Image (cartoon, rainbow, N blue to C red):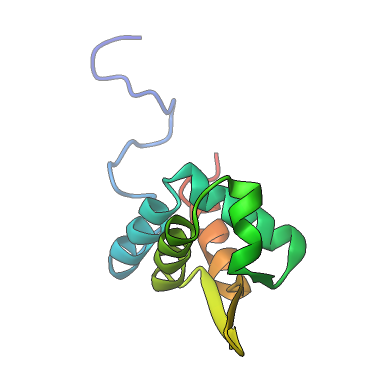
Length: 115
């Protein structure tokens, strides 16, 4: 490869020409990805995906964490819009916010421009 030759072969290399995430979506996307940057929260998402609606009290055992720590992680996921909290008497049940999780997955998939 000579100086000035680009890595894209005969396609023109124009930085920014294949940006797939609109500017107004960058901050919300980054915030959701940041929330999912914690292994415990990823595990909670997996548990909710496999089981649907789950009582917060039922997550302590599988996660090996105390109730306050589980509540902290669930609050972070809920504030990011990734889970929905439903109060049933004195119990709090959580489920995935399907549209938000699906949208997040699509946004991540869309980060790589088709080759």
